[in-house]
Image (cartoon, rainbow, N blue to C red; front, side):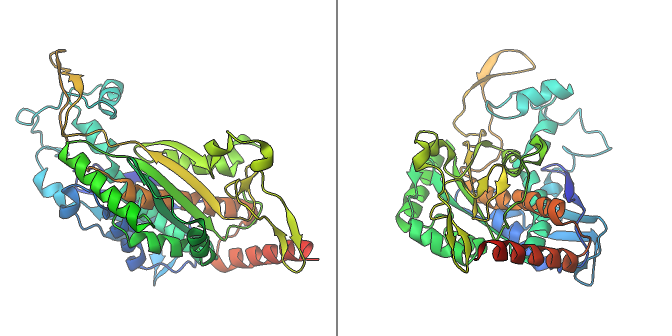
Length: 397
């Protein structure tokens, strides 16, 4: 089973990740990891930090001659901005007397609860670990599981359907056509837009909305749509709460900074409709097997994959560090003051879509391991292909 841990602070020397459980024999390239890191850095509305960093992963272990060897993989992503923070974030040499203490919490951020929880007299440690900069390490880690899945015919992609007041209604036919070619194809189409929207008019309106928010010192959130194609039927299980695929996917996406809501398919829309307009009818097609004319379940039925495209929607709140301040108070004096501004983005929704792609990859990979086992790519591939053929034969007539 794949599990990973990240370490590092936003303004520390580096971010790092250790990934355990990757099977042997998976072809991995440095270019693919760095591609995902570059995708995470892009998007209209990003702040000045992205002009400083040029994220690239250094692999320290677990890969030999371009293939995984089954042992833990260690990755490091250097922070170029560290050179500007060597005193403020020094590990051993104390500059406490000359370093400004941050004592004004930002509403909506981890600042206040984190400072109270860990007993700091300075919010800086909270800011630096809770920062979404940490997601660079998660993207690097997730890219390995994503590569493994791609070599089994399972692809992950995303698009942005809303930013602030702007919604990209898109064309269901366009999305379906892209997904027919695989979720990577849809992601590629989305990446051609600065806001990762498929509709040109929506893209223009979203850029204008971000510009207006920036002018006002405000921030914008949005809605991310994640798609996973090629997933075989029957991953996950209904027999125990912690084996349910939908809950595992929701937890992974919910763990991304600023994500406040997750649904499988159009779940909240479905909640307002009668069952006859929600559930996906089943048809047996001779020579093909089971088909569903709709996918309102989002590719998961009874907490297991249905064989259809898995569709996850996530709501990202506006970033809580704003140039236009809200009411707060100073922890040092307990007097009311306006909140402080920490360098940040106006909108990071397009980047969050890339992070979401990364964090769902280990979940799907682990569901495969639970179903098929195996320590080597070819072993897992053979078992998966045999299963797919058995399912097809059982219902093809």
